[in-house]
Image (cartoon, chains in turn cyan, brown):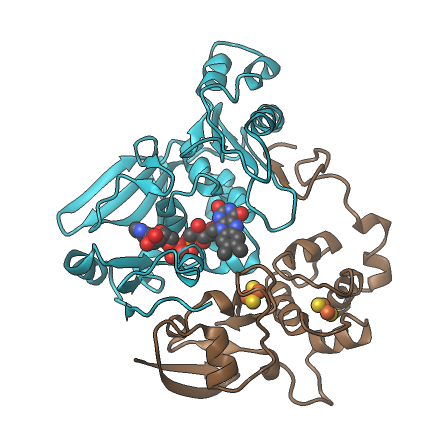
Length: 270
Length: 185
Ligand SMILES: Cc1cc2nc3c(=O)[nH]c(=O)nc-3n(C[C@H](O)[C@H](O)[C@H](O)COP(=O)(O)OP(=O)(O)OC[C@H]3O[C@@H](n4cnc5c(N)ncnc54)[C@H](O)[C@@H]3O)c2cc1C
Ligand code: FES
Ligand code: FES
């Protein structure tokens, strides 16, 4: 499978990428790891006129402890997260979730910025960043803005990003090593989640339970009100609208959400 | 057309290519190295696995232009010659880690990358580390043995009952090839 022809630019700085986006944003696509974009281009479901490769912009690839937060460059690869000592010490949920993405080859290429920007509700990292209460930092020639992840997603494959904006950083609170868990349910190795549940500090993020990553708010409220894990987990599918496909019906996914939430809360409690 | 210069197996290669040319096709058709196979063409089977700057990647999901000015290693570049096999290739031969051989170059390259990151993996770590590589022939048993042997461990000791983990890393019961992981347990 061969993509439709396109022009290719590989700027070596964020400014260079932003200048190209400003000029041709409507016709252009950013390429980071390419592990979501290239498959859809090969299927000819996407045919950008210009591909702007940000995959080697060094200033986008970092993990830094910054006050109460960990700042992660958008170009940081899944493998960087799983191998990072800072991540393991400060926000281990993120490393563990990154480790469940695809396979080692995919993790050597895929980036956290690409994963968040792609806005696939079946992706693992968006729900983890949502459970963490993280922030997405966007930059354009007009300046920089920070969008709480709770406001970032507008639907399947869609976000509040403007065509001239680039995700440059993801910020998540430092959580320490206790109180977290990730449960990802798949039927085959190396697969996407049928449902996934990320728990950290009593917050619960759901993978593949609606149009966007979701928080299990009823579960969170019940926990905050002193409910038991069993009682709280029973509410995990409330307010969700999971997809129905070959991997499972809506009812099956709702069941999985409750079961996985119970497991994740139990593990997180230690 | 875009000019690319890619070091393949230690040798400089260069060509004017269309940006849409996949690295797998660059290696097979432009450079003429045919060990790298294309199986699924959809990032699933791993037959096209090569090393890009030392890390395993699937060359069907990478543009040749993305590898410009970088180093690529294919199965051809591993061993000096047929008499002096790279330890991973030698282990696949000794442990009979292949049948038809179609998946083998990808398996071997993925193994080289795995052992670089984790020189003495457990059986479980090997199975997870090779989850991006499919084999339709062997049932994986001898592939896992090959990797254990390549890491300098004894397949008969490592791949025993103890190697078959029944509990998830979190301590919970493993119920599916899903993942359970978390703190304090
Ligand atoms: C075989 C396979 C299995 C996979 N399994 C999983 C899985 O189990 N779980 C999972 O979560 N994911 C999975 N993925 C997806 C993988 O994690 C992707 O790497 C990720 O979703 C996208 O990251 P990328 O860097 O490759 O983005 P790209 O493919 O380069 O880009 C994806 C989209 O985001 C945009 N984009 C990228 N970076 C930026 C940026 N900085 N600013 C603005 N826009 C940007 C691009 O324009 C494009 O629209 C899998 C992929 C493959 C091929
Ligand atoms: S051909 Fe690349 S993964 Fe199958
Ligand atoms: S040996 Fe035939 S596919 Fe693996």
